[in-house]
Structure formats: structure tokens, C-alpha cells
Length: 323
Image (cartoon, rainbow, N blue to C red):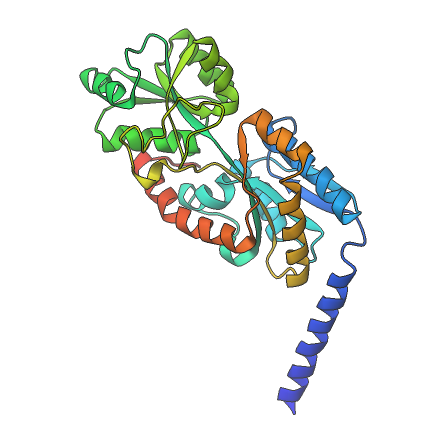
């Protein structure tokens, strides 16, 4: 008798879930962005929210919740009601790097969050100052080897993608370079231009104008293919550095609380993927040097699972720790 009652309850809940999904959405949706207003993440999220809201015929309100390397906003979504009315639009740091940087993370990505779509990737460039006597990666590492212990490199955030790949290059090639952490990308790039530090890894959106003006020199790009903004700059693999650790690690992704009804997730996936192909969102991507992906939820999960051991290895090698 208890078995039949349990079946009846499960069936009732399933029907209720399907019914609620059929009319979804019936009220405004909140998109949590674990980053401050005004930056690239916020700008892209707002463009995406506008486009998705038009398709869903309900407004999507962006709620900026910065703090703790994005963990505060991510935690808020992980604990939200799984009804499709609270979404997470985030970069990769709080879902990919945080578990290996912090001793305590207040959520488990695989358990507490549902995958919707990998929205875009951030293209990164290894750039040197104009006084560095190198035009290729092999010339650069030979120069660094010759000046072992005297070369510094910059990053705009301990444990961020730029820091991790730079530290990996330093450690695996035993170049004994010194890490200089900056509070943002702009001051790091300015110090490369002024000669305060010889090199660093930054976004193509920030570096491209300075590369074009000759203030800095791009030696390689990270990822599987060359960038249309820098067609003459080789990938790290083409430059003789084929390790998977040099694949792009900077993402922007869409997620929801775990246990959100499957039909709701399917609708959100459909709308998110369509929005990434809209002219307004593509313009935001292009302005900030991001590349559209718009993957399926399953593709996103596979990419996430493949990236986890790479992120763990990079963080271990870099020695990055966050308190």
C-alpha cells in the first residue's frame, strides 16, 4: 500500500512540474551576476538578459552580487528555489577554480547547480613589452632562460586564468620568474606598456588596441585556433607549446539551481543558445573580445568535466591560494 502511495505522490509531483513548466515563465526572472556592475561580465549579462527576456516575454532583471571570487552570487543561486526564476550568469572562476583555491566552498557545483549553456569563451593573449627582444615564444623563453631570476610577469587576479597559465609556463620551463599580482587588467597592461614588467597574459579586448599601436607585442594566443582580431599571431600549440593547459579557461556560462524542472531547463537552454546568436549580444562579445559558444547543456557539462583536472593541475603548479 505504501509503495502505491509513493508512486502516486511521485506521479502527482511530476504532473505538477510539467504543468508549471508549460506556462513558464509567468513572472519576471532574476539573473544573478557574481560580479560588479560596469564590467565586461555585467555588460554581456545585461545584453543577454534583454534578448532572452524578449524571447520569453518576461523581463529578466540582472542582480549583481560580487564578492569572494564570485562565490557569494553563486551560493545565492545554489540555494534558490529550483523553479526557473533565478539564474546564474558567471565566469568560470567560482564554478571551476574556486573548489581548488579555497579550503571551503559553500556549494557543490555538480550537486547544487544545473547546467544550461556555455555562453562564450574569453580569448587570452601572451603579450610582451616593446623592449623585450623576442618576436616568438621560443625566442621569449630563451631570453627568460638567459635572465633567469630577473624576469617578472603580471596577472590581474591570483588564481585567475592569466595567472594560472603564466605560472604553468614559468614552472614547467623552470624559468624562475617572479609573479606580480594586480587588482585589475588595466594597471597590469599599463605597466607592460611602461616597461615596469616585461610580460603578462591578458584579454584580446584590452590588448588589441595596444598591439595595433605597437606599444606591446603579441607572441601567442591561447586556445585551439587563431583569433580573427589577431590573425597573424600563432596559437600556443603552433608556437611549440601544445599542452592542453594552454587551452582557453575563461568562460561565461548560464546555470540554474539543481532540481529545476527538466522542461524549464530545456526552454532556458533553447533561449540562451538563440540569444548568443543575436546581433546585440554578438556586438557585446566582439567589443570585449569574447567568442560566442552557445553550447547545449550536455556539451557544457562535458567541457566542465574535462576542464576540472586541468584547472586543478594549473592551480597546484601555480601555488595559488585564496583565503
